[in-house]
Image (cartoon, rainbow, N blue to C red; front, side, top):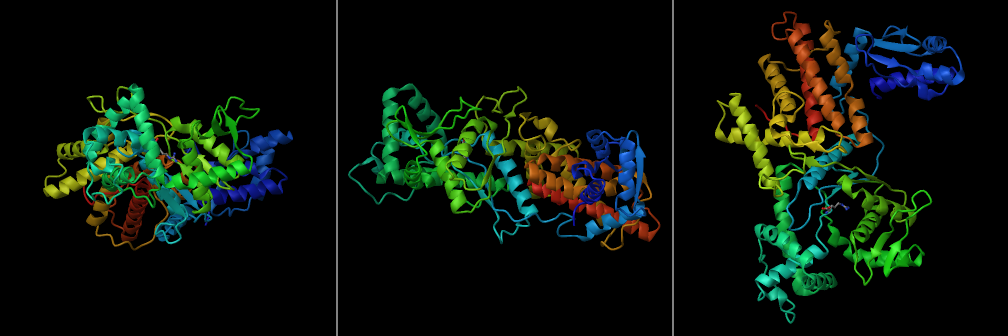
Length: 592
Ligand code: ARG
């Protein structure tokens, strides 16, 4: 069933059509003056202007014809032609009750099936995962959860939504690591050109080794021409399949992956696939051949390119498929990735949850894959995000100026949560294990919520002290709201029976209206790929609940039916908050 706001819009749109006007004017929105109305339809003004008519007359005509039961809704005409809409209390209670009974979908419609691939995470082998990858992971995970919920694909039975971690596991960084290791341990069997295997099953390096080796190797690569030539040679040999290098590379990837899986695991983030850049190596020659055959490519300064400049954008650089002297690039693997996702996964939509600084790269890939027909009819969207900065306004780093490791960041937020919980004297009766578990859940909520609550394209300042507060628009605040409602329900021994009665107070009315907004909010987050609408909503809902809780004396209510009704509202608020948090990837502790 469409949401309340949509049903109102549909009725008004029909009335506009009947009046010979464009239905677009019939849109109904939540009123920005809740003191005057709950919903409003302002389209009569613009419609009248377009037709040079009197707006109040147009609005009146719409009101006369709109097919909405006047026993359930009250309408009024205000100002120059605004239509105000208010639900009767009976209607409001009934709708809230219906939504509460819809335990599975909570009033949300299932969207038409669509194959969606979400490209998120995308860290690189050996390099420490930085905050950009962290944001991609947190936002991507939430989008994955929202899409799964909207398509009712949560148990993966249809597998409409596919999460793919496009690991950076190929190219010159791999050559850098090979050369660096060779310098340190030239006698390892991987470097003996005469040997073709078998090679040791145990990795010669740990993650700590890799993290220490990579920045040194990258610096040498930049500074020294001979070094650079060696690295490029090693990269080329690896990509051509030299057995020792391949064996070594597999160790690099597997050591990194084990480490990453632990990190993602502690964040509660999962991927269906880890098809890294290397996976596409084998697919690139065929793709390039076919593009050449179709006449899509050109040679330019020794490189094989797809020109992209248009009359509107004459400066747009071409996509480079093969650099001069041979060798594939980031562009090439992303083109092959599009082809694979479209052909193998039958993707109809591909979301790229990647830093906004890669927007030119993605624009080129999107244009080239559309122009060449590689993308077929798939829609591709760069769901870009801004930078997470420190309180100094620069990209978030450690105190010493280094890249902060995810493990350390998780530790930091967990410690902060523990400190807060201790200060608030909340954890006196809990065992040490419980305290650790709660602190971790609260710490991760701090981190994820901070990342999700702003419009994803804006940069934001990660202010740990502020974001771990239990008051204000924070993750811990919403978790705490759920825990408090739960303990209220427990205290009242509420078993979930009884029906929701018409509201008797303003705060009850507002709470019901806020509860009824849920389907619209999730829909919006889904259509715009913007999780922050869920954060705004969760915060608004908890505030509406607080006013309700302060105004209505739930526990001491004497009328048993009314008490049950109030408790049902509590339970529904809790259920909706849990859903909102779940879609953000945030767990709720049993106690706090
Ligand atoms: N590994 C890349 C980086 O660290 C991100 C990969 C994003 N996905 C993609 N299809 N390009 O910048």
